[in-house]
Amino acid sequence: MKMKRIILSAVFLLSSSLLFSSCSQSKSATKPAAKDTAKKAAAAVKEDTVPAVVTYPPLNKHLYDSLMKKLANGDTTGKWPVKNAPYPLPGAILPFKRVVAYYGNLSAKKMGILGELPPDEMLAKLHGEVKHWEKADPKTPVQPALHYIAVVAAGFPGKDNMYINRMPDKKIDSAVRLAKRAHAILFLDIQVALSNIRAELPKLEKYWQMPNVHCGIDPEFSMKDGTHPGKKIGTYDAADVNYVSAYLANEVRKYHLPPKIFIVHRFTRKMLSNYQNIKLHPEIQFVMDMDGFGPPDLKTGTYRDYIFHDPVQFTGFKLFYKNDSWLPPHHMLTPEEIMKMYKPHPIYIQYQ
Image (tube, rainbow, N blue to C red; front, side):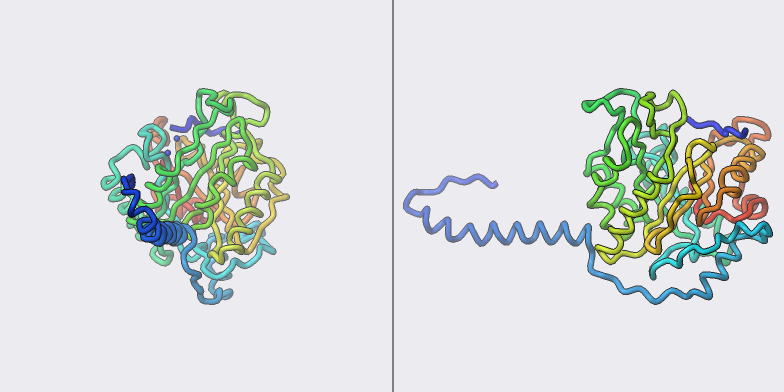
C-alpha cells in the first residue's frame, strides 16, 4: 500500500524430422504455412493494440459548457470552470461521465483494493460503488475504471539501481483483459522512483495505443534528488507533466484515438511545482487528483489548498477504505457528502 499522509500547512514446434527425399517438397509446403501463422499473429497484435478507427460524433460544445458549469458547483471565485481550456476531441469521457476507479496492483494485496480481493469479488464491490455514485448524482453517468500500478517504486535497487519494479507485459495484459470484461477503462500508473518519466513512459508504448487505456503519474515517488522512495515525498515539475501530455497527445493523433485522461496525484504543494505552466491539449483531459488520506476535515483542507486553489482542468478525489477511518470521526466520506461539500465537484473518484 502506498504510504501517504496528508500534509496541510498533507506493484508482470514445432520440431519435426524430415526424410531427405521429401525435403524439397516439405519446404515448399511449410513456407506458406509459416507465413500464414506470422500474418495471423501480427493481425492479432494489431487488433489488440490498434483497433479499427472509430468515428465519434462531433462534440456538443453547448452541452460540454453546461456540464463544466455544473461541475463548478456554484463557485463564484472565477477559478472554476477553468477559462480558456481547449475543447476536447470527439469521444471525450469527461465531463459527460464521472470515472469511478479501483486502484492498486492485481498481484499485491497491500497496494489497494484492486489487488486486495479476488477479481470477481473486487468487480462486484466496484459495481456497488458505481451504483452509489449514480444515486448520489443521477444526472451524471458513471464510467467504471481499474487504476493499475504498472511501474512500482520499490524498496530494493533492482538490476538498474533505480528502485523500480516494472510489471511484465503478461501482468499488464491481465489487467487489460479484466477491464474489458468489466466494461471498464484502464489506467496505467507510473511511479518512477530514481528513474524519470521520460525513460519510463515510452516503455508502455503498446498500451498507449489502446483507446481504453489512460495514464496516471505519481509525484510522491519521483525521487529527483536520489533519495530512496518512501523516505520522503517526491516531486514533479510542470515540465514533466507537459512531456507526458505531449507524448500522449501524439499517440492520440497518430492512432486516431479518443482523448486520453491523464491523472496527476497530489496532496502537498511541493509535489507539483509551477502548476500554472501546465499545458492543455484537445487530445488530453487533465485531472489533478487529491491523493491523501485522513479524516474529512483534513481531506477538505487538502482539496482546498492544492486542488481548488490551483485550477488546471478537472479534479479528482481519492478515498481510502481503511486509512480514511483511522482517526476520529472514523468515517470515510460518502458520495453524497462529497457532492455537497466540494467546489468544484470531482469528476474522477479513486478508491484505495
